[in-house]
Length: 435
Image (tube, rainbow, N blue to C red; front, side, top):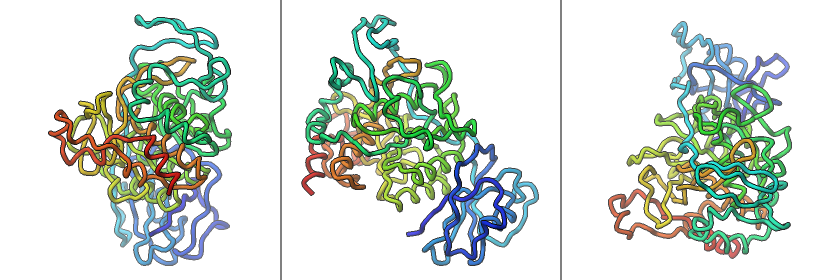
């Protein structure tokens, strides 16, 4: 399979020119935010360099597919002030141009039943009673012991998470989940100790190094990335979260930013990438980025979408053709497909995604609903598994040990569209360890 490499997004100097198509372009120190109107996949030929393709197209190379690709080498280019677009330049290459701006969005609903959380007590809101809790370090701790959020007890028992965690004492230690989203509340006491070093953080919206989940909770997409990170750490309490901001406060973003985010995460140590986002339009550029992760041994978990349609959003729709990509839908606590959850032949597994309690910006907790919440459950499960063997993989074990729910009467209208079923965390971890 072809190998992809992130190349300079700033102007390349002559010192960085490559001799030919068979060499891999250098990886940049840190990408910058782009406001490109489009992205394109451009065929490249022996002797081409990233600088030459940039000069030819007037864009910036995001992915350079130039190793082991025989005569099918390609580059993914962000077309800012593009010669191709402005002048209709005929460069004698196959060029696939696609829409980019605001083509992806998060796939979670707004939070409901929010309650504030302090270091020792909770302030009740919207009818929820206060309950004393302690938040410290990377996870929720009470009386010196890790405690799952009680609001999620039924969901975690449904998938056998307590038994899975008992079988995985490393609890995801040494594993990194990249959360490509609206950012993360970097100061949340439940997440501060769970974040990767700041040198691995990236904000492609503001073009800086602080992927903060900004804004007022409940408005647009604010809090979405924090919620996703919180769910992953509940499933795998010792996992580390790499925050990469590719979506704005309204919950939308550009294909070019997501492509850069995926490659950044792969190149900076992620073991698993969580994409609780999607586009209704197929994207060759996004598919190339997912392929890059797959070829580097990095698992990608993508949410199915929340329109209740018989089709998945992208990149989840690519799951059956990408070995390292898992598409995830949502089920209720009775193993019935959530009404909002998309379904299709390309769906692989389902996980709880209704009213999941998780962290929210400004030291808060909130309940969230959506396939966005189901995806980090699976990402966390992969971290549990990989942490035990300190090895990549596990995607096949997740599907192999899923619980078939097609026989439930309310699921029968979706026959053939529910994948392998609802995840069984306990069976999956045990089966993975016994391989």
